[in-house]
Length: 285
Image (cartoon, rainbow, N blue to C red; front, top):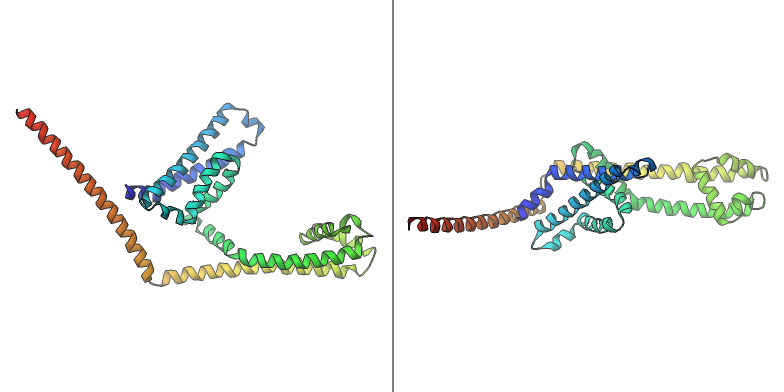
């Protein structure tokens, strides 16, 4: 039973089915935003059917995984993705609209094993690894923005109160400058008061926009190179003792499950044979 459950969950057909249902659910939720389509009963029924099938397959997958890890069901919750799936199922029953957004993340997990989208897996792995370093860059840029906001408020709050009237408005103005959205007009307004104001604005744009963006790009490129090198080393290195031991344990678990199924099958055959013999004895009498 455990072996069959593991085979079903790991089967590519099962993964394809779940991926198709998740994509269909996302498309249906998108169609639901159209007032013309949502008025048709057939579309509403189709949406309900697709969503119900998606939830049913997700629940079935969780149950099969628990059966595959029985009697040690706690192994199921040791995998963070399994915990994510379990919480997702609970969320889907109470907040379907929010759950469909999270289910899209579940789709990315399915796609990571497909050879056609291995580059997507590489990009996702790179982004996840880059998050800690990006946090430090955001903190550094936050300090720089705060310093420039205080200086900008003190310099321009009387001349341009709509942009520099308080600290919050100053930070919003600087954020607009980071995006390079009409920052020249902010510069010209400030230069009406002080012709040398361009030094303040140009220095901020160079530091916050050009240097900041290049730092983000550098981190992503570095982590992508590291992930590629790690993959190359794993492909060249022979399997380690730990990996062989894990494979051996998995094989032993599968053999144990197969033996249990064989014993159950033998017992069933013996009972059938005894019933057949009794039936033949009755016929002879």
